[in-house]
Length: 286
Image (cartoon, rainbow, N blue to C red; front, side, top):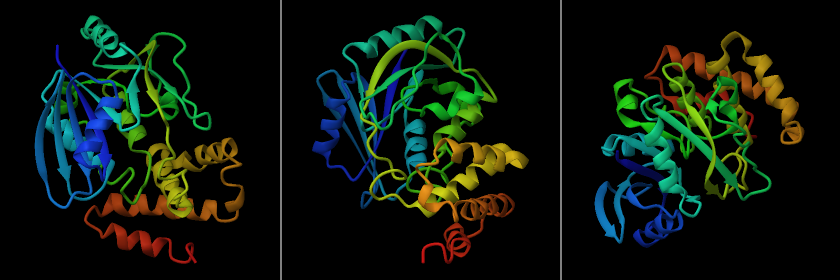
């Protein structure tokens, strides 16, 4: 059984990419998507026990990056990694063996990841079992081993209109796994294999765009929960009331614009999305 590790990053030199792979403590076959390059190019580097395929990609969008790497990989299983994820000691081989032993029953395997950022903890798997839909918002897609053939046969790809680098700047992992669970199960193992820095994201860090963040919430909740989107959104705001305390007068209005954006783009897929976003958020940035 073969495994490929797909790492997404942006604006890195070749030296920096090799440093990321080394820090990840990964062996075997690695595919790296390096976005925001001037032009498209590919390069293969063999470094000790690592086969590193580098793809320099123009433009931005983590979902587009992951889809490209998924199309380039040809292994039995693929694992999506961010550039701040590392294997713990010899955990890579242990997890590969655990996947091999249960691959006849499941096509996706999730393991525990340890966050080293106290402000952004990751809820841990307490016992072996299958992932429930309600649990999907507790973790990202990184570190889950997916049967690549199953993904390709079922056309399971990331929505390239969602995620960092897109108008809807988060939620790509949730939507991808939600689509996956409609077709198959994800088995989770009570074994910790990854360490994650959990650096500030594009929507919680110092460059945080709150208007786009709230707009994206409206889009995602409307798309995911339909008629009941406001109820689920209200629960989210109660849970994170401190995060939005300075925006309580605006937040629902902005979210409603995001929900409207979803309905319009669903009906008209060829509409100028950037223009539509600017029109719907006119006045909120002033």
